[in-house]
Image 1 (cartoon, one colour):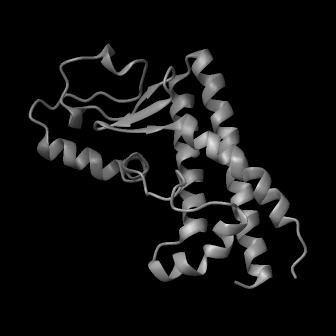
Image 2 (cartoon, rainbow, N blue to C red):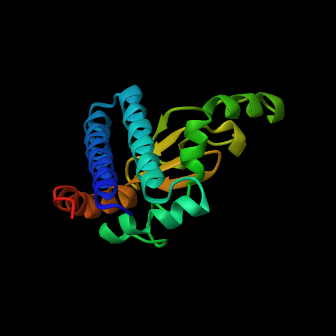
Image 3 (tube, rainbow, N blue to C red):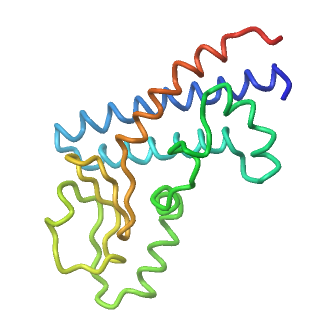
Length: 174
């Protein structure tokens, strides 16, 4: 990969890390204030920034993933990273409209539970496909249709690669 191109991808990862860390801080503040909409606004922004980091690191095809290996190497990231798999929760979030259509078509009871904050067992009697966005601040798990994703694990990895992205992006092109 050309060094100038590599620096641009490193800068993109740096910016997306900053966006993700701001979103994580926003989630913490909004959780303390019990501002449900801002909590989920922050979660959406954190997941979107994480998806953008994934796309920078791997792209959307095998050939792009091979071409982006120098970027991953520069950020000490590989397939063991939380960024490697495309998470189901991120996809649920991105395709929310399709989930509503599917819920309407497939739900037996037409119950709809969304934007809940607290332990997952606080509302009982719902089928998993009737449970949309849920955040447990104690575990930092985000749940959607029974699929879960841990935000703290994501933030930890972002905090690890962010200084690397800053350092690498500021190197002169060779």
